[in-house]
Length: 115
Length: 111
Image 1 (tube, each protein chain N blue to C red):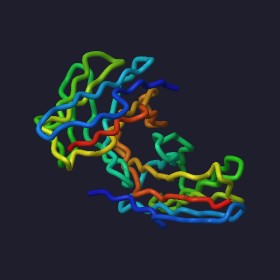
Image 2: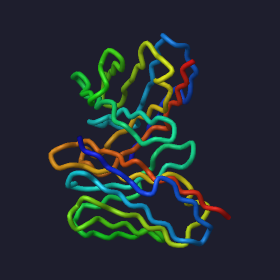
Image 3: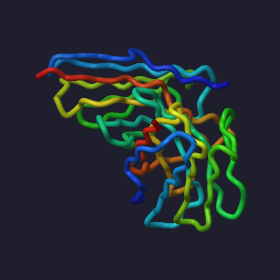
């Protein structure tokens, strides 16, 4: 299993500013994922955070808007840049501890509201 | 791109009634997982199905993977108020490491 600490748990931000979300795992994991969940919707994969290399972004998400860092095997950050109200959402980090596509563990999420 | 749809989108049941959610993928899956998300919470892994036609049970929950590995179902017998939440399937396509989450089914159980 894996215990994931994600912070902040929620924030209210002004349009045009940036917010960095942190995700700390209690064990070393190869793959970390960042998801967005808009109110009442499903989870959409933003990117896969790779240690030692650039993140892999999904269609519709770009590095300039969602820069990701992965300095080591237990930590990652996602920044939501130049925010607009459309970025209001829950952001979740997730890990696959075994790296064998067996199960995902999720952080508690960051609820972001942009005014 | 690959899509994973779930029906129904919402379901309200009386406590004690059964509940089923169906998951359909536009592509063949190598495996499928199910997650439960309580209101205000994060998704929690329930189970993984890998084999064609596989059926697994967890107490009152029965999970099934279709023969063609393109659909799956979750059936809850005699629902309880603790079953409230949104149930997501998540499919994995062979050759990838990314799970595509279904649209979800939100279950409300009326006491």
